[in-house]
Length: 376
Ligand code: SF4
Image (tube, rainbow, N blue to C red; front, side):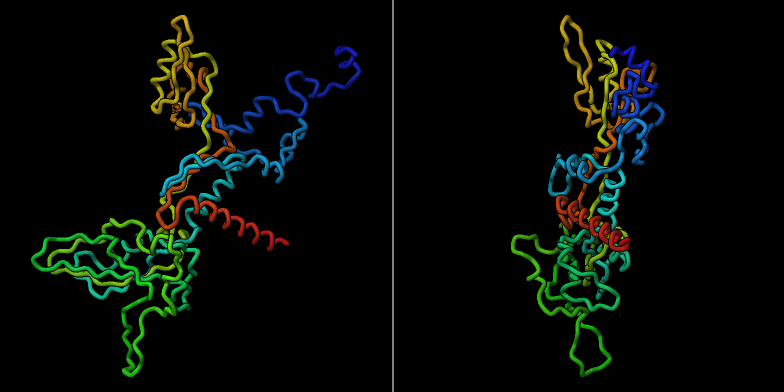
């Protein structure tokens, strides 16, 4: 049957249009669905199209299937150091990527100094300022080994870590700086004796440890203590002294930022830089110069001619310099891939970054289970 006969015999429908292939989205809708397009003044298509029937009229099922999510989801570690990690999360929705970020910042527990018992402080720094400063020191201790201390609990080896600081600058000596490394961990708990009105009672301390916390650690792990040695706590002049005990407990960043395990956790969508036409010779040189982060290179195409290429799109910060000015937006298109996230975690020091992310996943999993239980 000829095409002519076919169109005559059938009722006209959108599927007969030559520019809309059956079961596929036309390119402009596919772009809108998968990319944020960065125009010179503002980005467009920033929202995610999540409605399952959004493209039903074109025969496209836009619903989320667990199987296809499993098949397409990928995590690729790009950089891993002691303190930070950069990895790509591919095939995930922005809402889920953002939930990981929020959990990392505010719901993953760490140990931080919460209570400071000051026996003596003749330095210039006030007690409350010193206590606040101590609270902000990242503590290297695995929070998974400890329990939360509630108001009615007695501080014990499972919920409290005790540090002691006793520093003095003797008369006649030069001024000295007190660093975090001088906080000494007391694995057997507090050494300060509680004052008691009853004279005949056995003296007690501010904690009730039944065993040493040494047993909590395995031999390969870093000993409990400040994550960094050279954090300045105070400066002492001749004759000045500080004696205190600092009690660290388990908490989360939602309560106070001192418990946040990350200095920062952030993500950006993968940038995509596309040359819409051949950019050659002086125009290519101009384009290369426009980019502050060196995204473009120039290649020799023979006969003394040169052409611009996109060499390092990942480095693009979407500053939009390359599309500013007349006609430039017709040569270069700037986009972001909606389901590809470049995730960066900077650990504050309590746990390594490669441990933080799986812990965040566990917390999200627990939350989902709680919702399912509530609904069922
Ligand atoms: S948007 Fe900025 S960083 Fe990205 S390619 Fe253009 S000039 Fe370079």
